[in-house]
Image 1 (cartoon, helix red, strand yellow):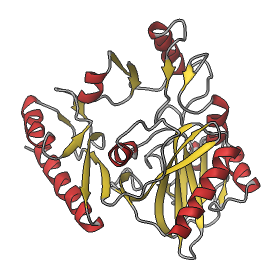
Image 2 (tube, rainbow, N blue to C red):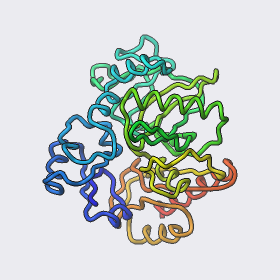
Image 3 (cartoon, rainbow, N blue to C red):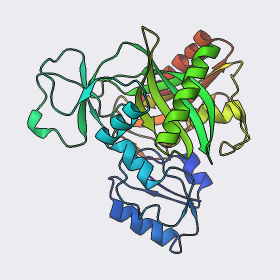
Image 4 (cartoon, rainbow, N blue to C red):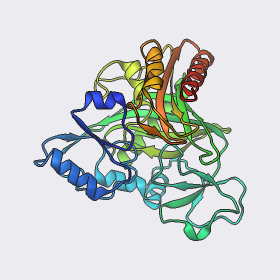
Length: 338
């Protein structure tokens, strides 16, 4: 197994024959790397985060067995006009949006269709330089409510809801809408049916395949409002592997509401530092006793706001699970300050 990625980790390097880390997205470079790894296009390919949002060339997928979504589906999701037009056709609610800057500043955000994890979402303010707005930028009206996600698997028109999660943010000065983490939720049967109906409509309309998720809001009036489709596995895959404990690329899966609450959180650096042997040793103390994954490789330079690792928690109550995540987060960050 080979990986091409922006952020590598000790775990990834241990399970892969070779990891190719790239600093900037270049489709020509990725295509050349793929052909050096797999010149006859015999290997399976899974397109993950950062890549599916930027994909513009079908040569990356080529004739390889594709475990994720087609180029056509990804293109349809990444194009704002096509995306919202399709949602409108299948009667799916979405926030008010527009390509041109709104006249009022209150309750609007600026989004980038190539962004992941809230990295490129900003508040729409007077200081925004209108002349620098790119074609993949659009404006979206803020909707009050619970920000959630639903994870699901699609294969041969079989569509399986896997989990529903509540999201939280880890905002910073530069990234006010940065995704902090997810925690599973116990939902009413009525809401589960509504979510299931929505993912079925979306999967068929966008011809989805493999593991996907949607981000949505349950508004104060109890409407389900779609924000984004994530046409690839995301942070939630860590929760799913704990809930189902089996092959997630299987049509034999059935929706299971977990008895416990599961949470995963991204820990971001608050400063630039080197992941030294001393810090690595401290991480290893908790690695096997508490859930911590995607630990950096030794001597890796971690910049301010870069993800350091993932942490995971599980408990019988939502509050206790959040407490576990909070305490473990403090511990991890304290090691980087030592």
